[in-house]
Amino acid sequence: MQIALSNPITAERFLNIRNRTEQICQSLQSEDVSVQPIDFVSPPKWHLAHTTWFFEEFVLTKSKPDYKVYNTDFAYYFNSYYNNVGERVIRANRGLMTRPTLEEVLSYRAHVNENMAQFLEGEVAKQVCDVIEIGLQHEQQHQELLIYDIKYILGHQVSFPTLDFEVKLHPENQSQRFIKIDEGVYNIGHKEDCFCWDNELGNHKVYLHEFEISNRLVTNSEFIEFIETGGYDDFNLWHADGWDWIKNNAISVPMYWHKVNNKWMQYTLNGFKEIEARLPVSHISFYEAFAYSQWKGMRLPTEFEWEIASQYLDYGQLWEWTNSAYLPYPNYTKAEGAIGEYNGKFMVNTMVMRGASVASPTGHCRPTYRNFFAPDNRWQFSGIRLAK
Image (cartoon, rainbow, N blue to C red; front, side):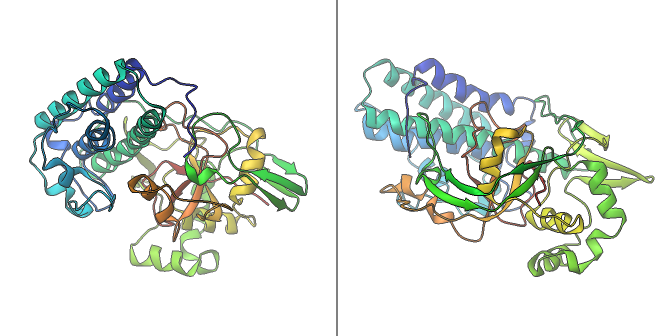
């Protein structure tokens, strides 16, 4: 990771970020926090505990001499995928843990917050500050994942509950036009003096042919036309894997869409509403984004095209699928130990997404940020930008 201390790690900043995680959960009921309706969704209670365990495991137990571990079993309960740290509960079984209770998890957060705040009042070595910064960035990533998971939990209930924490898309009101990017050799990768993940490093040159990219995202009304003209029924538009996926899972509309009394409806965190034509279509898999681009006689941009074009784009509404597999940049090296497991071991069978979303915390929107998801994932806040 590249760490810059342009945002000093004070106790105030630490607690502000930590408090936002709890604010996202404030309108949940106790019955909501342990639910895991599908294996890729984690219960909100687990997010609250896992992000706390990160600071206990990687900072307090290593660097605060008088620190007393809150509960020795929690490392097993709330480790996610760090094999270097030890055994853990299988991901699909996180929803079986009704214990520890939410009250106990919140007590755990308070315990770690208090010890971290005390620790940050003293002199902290640069190497430890780097780990804390990673932990804060990690917590902010989980804040976004927490919103995805809460929406999946509530959006698959018959009552379609609402959440007080507003996450709102805005209409794509611009007339569509295509921005021309000239052929040439361009620099790719993180160059600024601020935090980035290791997968953004390895600044290198890429040759791009001339291309054009849309100034806005695909809208709901445009995607409805794709549906109503048989886009989900034409195998010519789909990857073989994508065709198998929609047929095996009976996929015929974006996630959270329903047709009720001949009206297109959509679950949002703020209620079950009629679909707004000009809002960007969201919760789209890579397979669906690709098929739509084929139907339009266009394509998805590569991640390199997206990065170079980003200076001309308005982005941040939805993560945007690219046609690039998630692979290491030249000279990529993994960090030693558990921290090195953060990105590198996922560089297979996933596609890169660029930009950010309305669920992203402040500061998680930069042109070089490389998000990545499996091509069938669509519970994340994802959308489509066309290229040609």
